[in-house]
Amino acid sequence: NLRKIVIAIDGYSACGKSSTAKEVAAILGYRYIDSGAMYRAVTYYFQEHHISLTNPKEITKALEQIHISFKVNQKNGTDTFLNGLSVEKEIRKMRVSEMVSQVSTIKDVRTAMVDQQRRMGRERGIIMDGRDIGTVVFPTAELKLFMQAEMNVRAFRRQQELLERGQLVDLDDVIENIRQRDEIDTTRAESPLRKAEDAIEVDTTYVSFDEQVDEVVRLALSKIVIPAN
Ligand code: CDP
Ligand code: CDP
Image 1 (cartoon, rainbow, N blue to C red):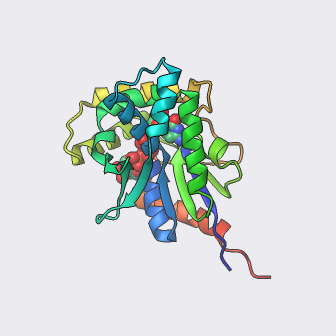
Image 2: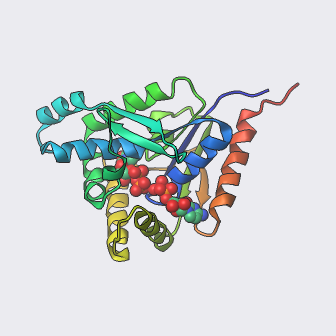
């Protein structure tokens, strides 16, 4: 006896949210949505179109022009599309990372993204990661996780990820970027990053990737399987 649930994963930058969510989604046959990729795509659009972050009218107009979608690629990953074009590579670059948290403080940007995210979750059977998924986007999600890990471990893992994408970034620059984003994300007025009261804390510092995937799958199954009686 199975039911479709909503799984929300929030937490700091680079502690393993998206890679874990992607793997767990594949195992459960769930849809995975990377909400951070949406904020990154908006940021990329703003940069390409020289949108001023202090001009609300410009921002409103720009948001009307932005259509974000996801497509599963051949390597079992997900590509992010902005107005029909893949921006997966561009949105992972440091140029976007350096501006995305600033863009994500803007109320209109958040409202537009949260609307889309809720639409994507209507059919349930979804796993979404971000900063405000358990607190704002899906406050009634059946399973909420709050991920963390020590800074040095997070920075090293992110540096490796960037390297695999062909980007050589100094570890100090990665640490600096993660620190700045965590600071902005946790202190902004509009839906700041915080642990939902009913979220389960997962620390990934000392566990292997496979162990953390197993743990999340186990937690998910305990909510998915309805005892027969
Ligand atoms: O993967 P990484 O931890 O680097 O970040 P991300 O998940 O791609 O998110 C990039 C940025 O988008 C975050 O630092 C937040 O500023 C913003 N974000 C947000 O405000 N709300 C979300 N639900 C997801 C991301
Ligand atoms: O989404 P978030 O920014 O929280 O993190 P991520 O993009 O999933 O990046 C975490 C990186 O650390 C990925 O390359 C994972 O494969 C790797 N990793 C992990 O998540 N957990 C471990 N226990 C070991 C490595």
